[in-house]
Length: 271
Image (cartoon, rainbow, N blue to C red; front, side, top):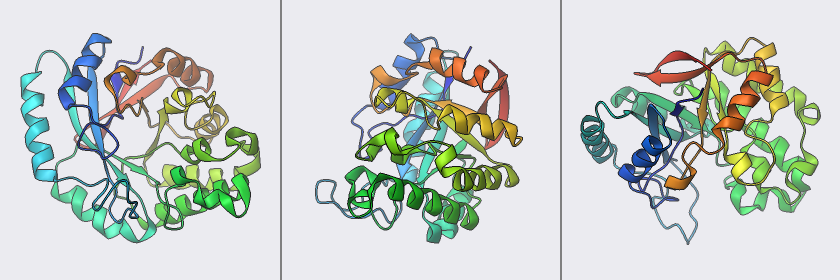
């Protein structure tokens, strides 16, 4: 049974209005034993008028102050980890190395949210050459990021880009992008890092979690063992979203354990 949600956002993230307390209370109501708050920090995120300057950044000092206070308040009720989801770009390796060495995060997700200077959410990377080209560009950018940073524990939502293609999964499969996906998975494993099973794909109606089960299977075949489970929730009602399905997927893909992180170290939990 999966009893921890290791990917969730609060009002420290530009795209959430949820209080930390509301997210933690939701986790307790759903029977979780541990959560990790992983708010967005995307240095050099492109400017979009509706988001304003400084989108997807926060004050780390204030973040730790609030989360450590709540961590102490909830002792005996639920374990609260202090994490972060960093927005990887190839030139930001030194920046995130400095940040993650300065602050005592329990867990660091590294995710690719920006490709060719734009977030795939806005659809610009698909307009010229279509979905498949945009997906390939994103996977190529992910490879460049992995070659330029070690400052993360788990690579976030590997096929996140598929959410935003015009035809979404119609132009996507593991087989179609195997050379890129295999290189991503091999780099993750070589670095001693992990990936996550992110249930937001189900929430967004894709019909699969991130990454697709075929990618999860391939990760396991290549020797990958470290895998966290996260809802990518931005609202309390989405905490632990479809975790029953997530457990089924992990077992079908050959996993017998999932992972939590404490003090940047993986802890394996039996499913």
